[in-house]
Structure formats: C-alpha cells, structure tokens
Length: 403
Ligand SMILES: Cc1cc2nc3c(=O)[nH]c(=O)nc-3n(C[C@H](O)[C@H](O)[C@H](O)COP(=O)(O)OP(=O)(O)OC[C@H]3O[C@@H](n4cnc5c(N)ncnc54)[C@H](O)[C@@H]3O)c2cc1C
Image (cartoon, rainbow, N blue to C red; front, side, top):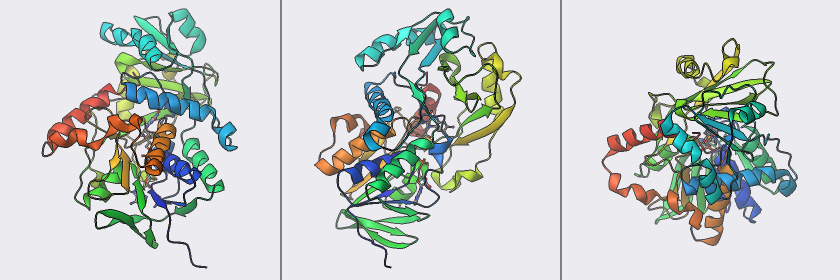
C-alpha cells in the first residue's frame, strides 16, 4: 500500500504545541500529518512540571493560560477523550518586600484577565497546602482554578483526539528540510521521503531553529536547561493539596505520584546551542546540584523535602526569549510555513489555546489578535546583537512567572 504523501498541512514535532496545533487543524476539516523523529510526546513535554499557572504579569500570557485551563477542564466533554487533571489551585508566597508586592498584585492582575485570585493568611495556606510552611510569608495569594496534570497526558490526549478525527501519524519520521518554492512552503523532506503540503507548522521545540536556519532565518530564542525532581511518596502530601511557589526563591512544588515534585530556576542558567542538544532527551544527564541549592533556600517552607528520598530528577530545554513571550509567526520568505517556539517554560500549559489560535490563523488567513504579542518582527532591531538577546533571555529565565 502506498502511503499518502500529500496533505493540507504537516505539523513537525509531536510535543504539546504540535499536538494541539495538529488537533485544531484536523478539527477544522483539514487533512493533517503529524511528524516526529522520536516517539510522540517523548521530549520536553512529558518532562515538564505540568503546572498551569494563570496569573502572569503579562496580559497576553495570562489570557492564553486562562483559556488553556478552560480547554483542559472541558477537554473530555469536548472530545470524548479522557484527560485527568487536578484543579486544586495554587498558593504563592513571598518572603521579601519586593516579591510581596508582586504577590499582592495577583488579585488585580487576575481580575484583569478574568481569573479569580485572592490574598490569604498562613492558616488558610496551611489548609490548602499542608505540606508547606508559610509562616515567614509577607504575602500569600491563592488562585483556585490553577491546575496541574501529568504533563505527557496533554499531548497524548490531543493526539488521540486528532487521530479519531483522521490525523495521519508520522511517528519516527525525521523532517530534514522545509521545502520552499517561489516563496511558498510546499512540504518537507523527511527520512521517509517527500511529504507535500502547502502549510507546514514547525513545532520542533528547541530544535525548531535548526530547520529555519537552513533557510537563512535564525530565531530569537535561547534553549535553557530546566530541571525538577520528584520524591518517593510522603505521608504529608495528598493529591487534593494545592501547588505551591515561593516567589522570591523561584521554586515550585506540587503533589505528584504520592510524593512531591520540586523544581525551580537557578541563578546561573545553563543555555545551550540548539545544535548541541541531544536529539533525544532520554540522553539528558540530570545535574541534581542546582536543585539541591534551590531546596536549601526553602528549607523552612518545605520541611518535607528534608528527609525525602528522590525518585527521579529530570529536565529538558525550554526556549527563552528576551521578553518572556512566545515567538509565533509565519516564516519570512516562506508563505504557509509557520513556527511556534519561545515557550519560556510555559508551553505545556498554554498549548491548548496557542494551538487553537495558530489553527485559526491558518484557517482564516489572518493572525488572531491573541497572537499579536508573539510576532517575530518585534526582535527585528536585535539582528546582529545575538549576545544581548542571549543575556536578556537568561535574565528572563530567572524571572519566569511561576512567581
Ligand atoms: C523541567 C521542566 C519543567 C517544565 N514545567 C512546565 C510547566 O509546569 N508548565 C508549562 O507550561 N511548561 C513547563 N515546561 C516547559 C514545557 O515543557 C515546554 O514549554 C513544552 O514542552 C514545549 O512543547 P513543544 O511541543 O514545543 O516541545 P517538545 O515537547 O520538545 O516537542 C518538540 C518535538 O519536536 C520533535 N522534533 C524536533 N526536531 C524534529 C525534526 N527535525 N523532525 C521531526 N521531529 C522533530 C522532537 O522529537 C519533539 O518531540 C517545563 C519544561 C521543563 C524542561
């Protein structure tokens, strides 16, 4: 049997973002192929913390985060495919005056974006996240509709729903080159031969720039290592407990597999060049030392971690940008070719709305307003200032708004 090789669209990369784009395109009646050189949903996405934190300092980010939480909560009803999640809310505390000012802003930032967030006292925090000690807090916020989920479940659910709607899976198929003729995308060259399509969406995570650079278009993103750990089961942690962040320490925690997941942002980020990344993050070598440093910063707030046994340390390479926003655009010189990158460590939880908006753009021919903040040309003035872009992206890493 000859495999079909012509589609309305090819999506490259089956992480959370590619899976969501593919689902939404397929749902709009297009014939879509989804290609990934490794197994589906096997790279950054399943290694994420799975936190969906909606109150962000930026309106654009908050908006896609809120719509994505709504989409996750309604996913099963909408698609018939089960998707488990724990909508236990999130508690954020600050121990310094600077961080406390940010936390005190959560209710108004939330209200501006249709998200309920309230200030609470340590007694209330102890009820919501009993594994955390917030007595040293200057301010604590609680966002009841924040949720978390097993991260790999999200892309897997989107892929399952897309397959039911007729998606063509190209699992284990590497895309080697984006094919462009007379300024239009015409398909991709792959390890399984040529695949034709007038629309190509590059969702290849930190490897996306490797495909655009072949066409002479570098992307203003920086892959930065990010890690977390999960403990063995702990008596003090239950699935019904809220997630927890210490904003000034840049750390987060949540119930996971009967234990606690703990991660955070190191002071000295470890960027990497896309070409130096392993092709398969199964080869990622965890470095527990920075996590140990972060843990020491919150000894008082997370006493359960003191004697906890570590079950797993894992990590990956999210892509950072100089302003903390995605870069989502049509590729210059290649009409019909789109790219979705610059997740700033938030691409898992915002994939539902992002994928929907990219599909709307492709179907309707006009960029939705919600993607305006993510235009690539906002970095035009930065051409030739790669080092500066890099320094700003590193700064963003430390400021990422899990806080
Ligand atoms: C430790 C950690 C914690 C995180 N916590 C959170 C969190 O709590 N909340 C949140 O929202 N985000 C979080 N993130 C960020 C999140 O993981 C990313 O934003 C998200 O996974 C990005 O999805 P993606 O689809 O772009 O990337 P990926 O999941 O990496 O998918 C890209 C895919 O492209 C494929 N690919 C690459 N090149 C090619 C090619 N040439 N041909 C074919 N296929 C190709 C890859 O094999 C891969 O499957 C975290 C990240 C890490 C590392």
